[in-house]
Length: 477
Image (cartoon, rainbow, N blue to C red; front, side, top):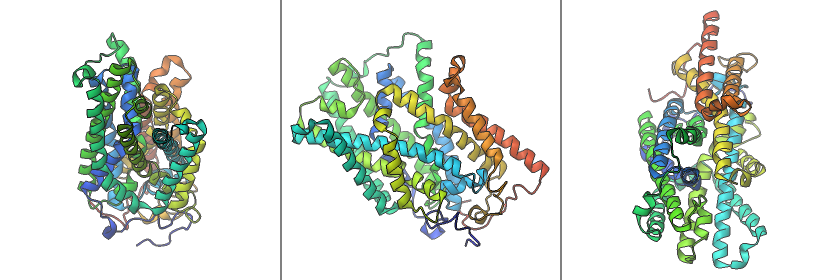
């Protein structure tokens, strides 16, 4: 039971989930990851590696390694959500302060808005392609924007229905989408003469140096792909029945689903090289090259369902909570979702998807240099500084353990600034480009190290910080 909560820090959407309301089991987390992974950005992630010059096994290996790496911070940040039932913007108050938490929450929310825009743009394109099959006159560019708006409105309707609708969509969508993905793989590889010609498509890299020049930033992009959810995973694990349910479900769901569906993207794109002499990395554009209306229509329907599933789960839950955290009295989960939809359009997703280079080097690696430092600070605070002990009540009130200096922990802000600055330094100093290529890793390590040192020095000066008091909401030791 929370006592003396501050209205500026609390509403029902940010409140800890009671133990009897934590009903998500292992299957829910497996299906969540399957549904979030079976989407067009995953396909394009894999296909962009083929377009960049890798062969099929180099692409799959890079994706698998990236997802095994990002699974580690994912599970570490997930622990607090399952133990205390709190969402990401509340958890981050422990390290950044009850007011300072707004900065990492907004940074995470803005990245999610960008992803929301990307997914909505893809869904609009799929609707447009389906219309052209049924009505060739719909090829007009103006219709593209109408379709984009229609799909945006559909997403907003799902947001308005709330978290239970999202859970329902993930539960029924996961097995359905995997089946359709495998069907698409079977169909197009048949067109290309089977798996033999597809898997024999060679790598364009002639030397190890050439390969690693492309591999390093690509691996960072793989980690960056889920660096967003690695932060806000408590938004989902706060509903977990137990630590084991969420940990095993995620460990099974994330790497397996991403690798399997990435293989679909890799194989289909490799097949496009065999069929058309070039790697067509955009699946909507690829489907449009075939003149089989029934197959194209079914495939585009699958794209639409997958995009809707992923968009509301991966790109709405977190920013809705994050925006709500700015002013809980005025911004509910629903209102936060609508803000996400508006900002997502303002970020011009059509430019972020203009080429595979913009997608990987500009978008994925760029924001990973901001999110890696936040992950480093959160994990260092929870495991190294506080030893997994939080005072839940103080997370929702002023003047408590997480008040720091007027609600802001300047040590976290300094650590974030240093980590991001070092990670992004390679953008402005050419000889240090490798720092940008490793942006997530560099930012994570620098910020975690600086934060731990600063907090331990502060504790040595003032032994009462942190107190490691624990009250309310705890579960899952």
